[in-house]
Amino acid sequence: MTDQVMVQVRDLVFAWPRATPLIRIDALALRAGQTHLVFGPSGCGKSSLLSLLTGVLPISHGEVWVAGQALHGSSEAHKDAVRRQHIGYVFQQFNLLPYLSARDNMLLAWRLRGKAGTSPATIEARLVGLCQAFGLPEALLPRPANTLSVGQQQRVAAVRALLLEPDLLVADEPTSSLDSVASQALMQALIDQTKACGTCLLVVSHDHSMRGMYDHQFDFASFASSREQGAVS
Image (cartoon, rainbow, N blue to C red):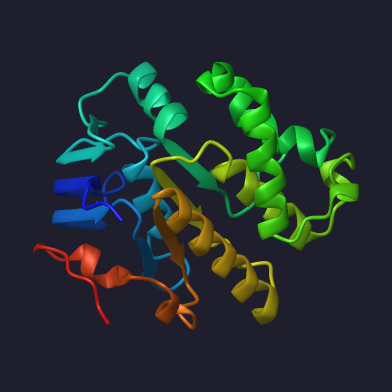
């Protein structure tokens, strides 16, 4: 376990045009190898928070660093590079390419990142290990993504996000399409695998029934107040 701060936020304020501030964070630090849950009702702004912390939404007020790289005041090219090099993303809608195989979807980030300086043998070993951890049988890997069940697609998306051992992994409502048993299994695998490689895990969800699984939990309502953010037990 490292004490390295992987996400740092200062004086961040965000509002949609002609609206009152939706997000206001005076100070926040998320550390490598730790798991974090932000919970709150659907539509409260949790996905907007992830978009700010990954540079998808423009940061007009405040400062955000990921893995020591500033996202505020940065060009789109720089933010794209930070996402490629440091961030893995598990999307609520999976964002798999439907006619690519499960395997090719898993390898997509590695290929788009110019092979990331990681050998094919190393990537293959990681892929096999992650498939085992997420309960994906080898026979499933050649199948097109659009032929997989919802649960299988979500696990493929998780493997893709983890394959390059990102510094930060964000997951947007990763269990919203799953039943309670499948949800718990997916989240336990995500937590185990991020801890194994020292990745900082940030999950947003309207379901906080499993919040005891995480190192730190935040009620989204706290991100609308002007004070230093603290986790809840």
